[in-house]
Image 1 (cartoon, rainbow, N blue to C red):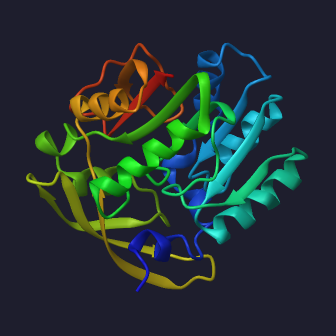
Image 2: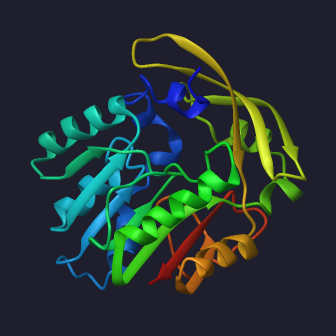
Length: 253
């Protein structure tokens, strides 16, 4: 049986583009551009690119982008959208735990839990960060978002999902947060692109800032900044708080 994240994205691309948490692309790319010094000569790797929303927007702005994802359905939709937008993005199917790139990119982005932290083990999640590090030359910038481990210590993940989900979006219920592993286990229900309903037993790893900092330092990253990730409004001014569902991480190599 395939892992839950492979089952989820097997036929869930057009419906994915309707999810509430993917509607802030332009503002998020504004932040990415700012961190890159608005230097369009930068070659960017988009890890877990999904349907290509950040990759395509950055390509519109003149950047060279390679987008990788494990889901062929997501990549197929990404290529369609790039064609519609009239931009050239190199979309490739790869597992983020086993990337072929070595010192090829000036920057990497990994948005909306682009693989990390969906994996079954902490070692697999670490492999994703290591592969990103290997793919970057120096100097380089790495920008990503991940689940904020402070949030479930103070708030209900299930309630958050109910309050922020829009009609037709995936729903999450039966959430249980394991304090020993910092994993949230839940039942995710969604409708695929053919109108079929699915129910999956999922789990995701939440991280606290000190863990992320240590992991990145062990891979040679520096100037590590961690902030509250607000959809469509990324900013270094947003101090990470316990009510931020995601954290925004910016570091350099």
